[in-house]
Amino acid sequence: MRALLLALCYMMGFALTASAQSLIIQESIVVDYRSVVARIEASDTATARSRLQGVVTRLSIDEGDQVKAGEVVAVVVDSTLEPQLAALRSRADGLKSQIRQAEEDLARNEKLLANGFYPKARLDEQRTALDVSRRTLAAAEAERRALVARQGEGSIRAPADSRVTSVEVVNGAIVSPGEVLARFATLTDIVRLSLPERHASEISEGGTVALRLPARDGSVRTATIIKIYPELRNGALIADATVQGGLDGLVGERVDVLVSVGERRAIRVPDKYVSTRFGVDFVRVKVGDRFVEAPVAIAGPSQGGEIEILSGLRIGDVIEPRETTT
Image 1: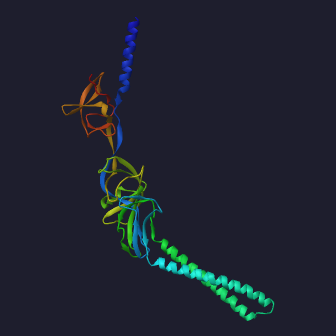
Image 2: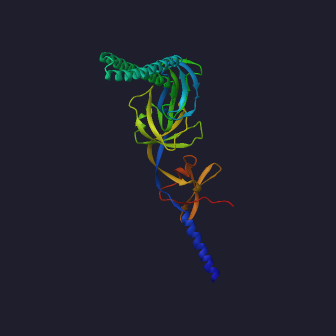
Image 3: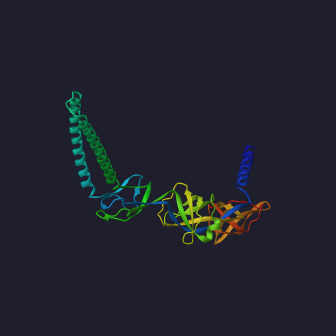
């Protein structure tokens, strides 16, 4: 009797397990995507220009380097500034000596004037001359500070956290004011996409697209369109997108943009329910009280662990996983 009860419990457990693995076919909403070839552009670009006429004495960057905002990337030296600074320093030192002497003479003559031994008109002339010397010294020091500040303009700094895309000069090169020394681009959380014009209707602000770099690992990143520029550039739509986790790409690198082209109803089942023999795909479908293998047509290989069934199944069919061989 106990053995019979154990057998019944075992059979009931098996039936519950089989029932739990059974699946009732239902329709699901499938979003179709189209692969659009686009190119990555920098969301922000900047140039480092020389503000002096001089020689590049130090160049600390190369193409592809990552730089921080404010980092010195090059030094331009104007050889004419140092002699001017030396002349101004000498002039200021001379004026300081004259002022010290004039202050001593003025203090002595003021005592003589108090005792009636020095003319007041002459003392007023000395006071005026001292004031002029002080003003001349202030002007010389201001001119010297201006030259020091101009000399400091020879230190070329990176405008932002960015990547160096091109370096236009070499060490020892003679540059003019306004000449470009290097170009920078930012590729962080925001990228600028250049898409063909014909796909303009498929892109909208706030929408999401999937990005895939075919030249790299082929991983798919989700990007949100935050801005669409109203002007086409060389027949291309320009859009800015934020990429989750950033995008380690190159400026101008080709990228596949997977854009949604619509939704449709489809039957999708986990891939463990489909078996293939001799090039034909089968699914175990319940007919009456038993399961039989019915041939089906599938749309393609498994995607995300599911296979789309084109024909061979109907809504409400009950299927079970394929049999495993031991």
